[in-house]
Length: 299
Image (cartoon, rainbow, N blue to C red; front, top):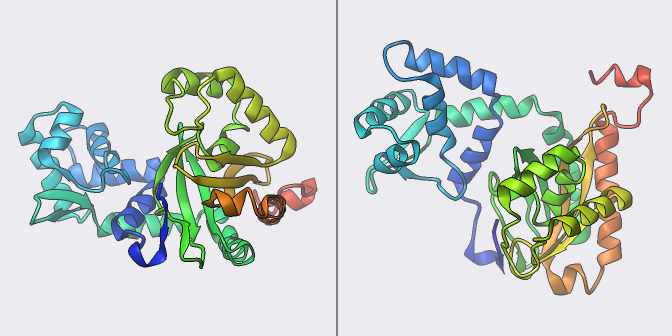
């Protein structure tokens, strides 16, 4: 995730937006595409998908050698996959660095998949309204395994603000957006995440004690919102609330983020109310809290 910085110095990277789009493509569709472009001539479908999944917001470009090393496959085999992906525009190549990055086909398919994601379409105007009313950066986050992904963002109009990019990943256990998603996971998932991550310390206020984290998650469920201060990024504070679908499942979180002096010291309670109101309105449009007959419209 980004940092608090002047607006004149940064802009959202195009490649990271493409990376976010990649995460919108259903695995079933990826499987069909993999069978189409690879056929039966060489390699496994699973390995092909593994190559594409290596591209993350922290690794927007990768060399053939890096891909081969990370997947423990021969370099010659790696080049065969990369050539097919390049021919079909699933990957493009930076001729100056000889590194590969996600291509236009990924972008096109992801955009089509995103159109079928109701929360993205419904949340968009509320995200803009939240940023306008709070004068802070507003973020929509969705889950991806044990991580959270920035699905959409409206930056603060202020010069000093929190910045990140679509597609940027963050852990579920650090920061208000991720913890809001984690709080509504089943206990077995939470225990597995704690075991897998070890609750590694990511910043000065990261919660590294499992029992303390579980108490915090219980508070989030009880209060209906989460807050954080320098848990994932230094001097970045955020407030987040869960978004429910018509089945009553948490499918995303909406949040505001910015420097501590503005988020927590000036208008914390107002921001909490704004974030919760935004989450409630999005959830309502997704069918949350509707009658049985009304819910049938969303199924």
